[in-house]
Image (cartoon, rainbow, N blue to C red):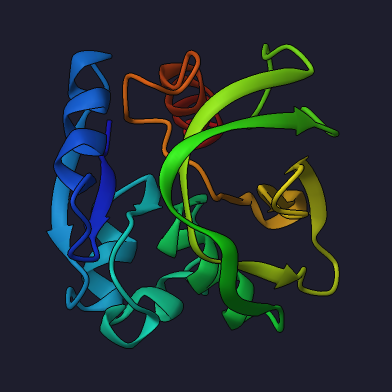
Length: 184
């Protein structure tokens, strides 16, 4: 079976995403965001767009969204998805990393098995302020209206929070759900 590619966008937790998948016995490779889209299309069964400092350093990530593969964007990965499809990202009012209680509005495939409220670890230095047309809002919090969004028919999902850190409630479930989505 082909691996899931974790795209390194220079974020401090990209190696933790890779390790979380490996620890779940999910075949995974960490790749630079400069990898040619054709190589990505032929080499994996799904893509996780990892976090990073800025949209300016996102390399080829927006092009990966046109490959027809399932995509999970985490933090900056969410912002790449939102801006590529016509949403807007702006600086958040709450700033840096910390705990957030998230209300799940639509469980769908990516948040399947979670309770209606979970405690997560997130950065809100930047956040989605307008959801792209056609996307579904999956989760919100008291400080961010778009904690998670999805375009289910294209199997594209984005999370503001970091499921790869131990502070996030059952973060591995997101990766298990995404692996299942990328297997179908």
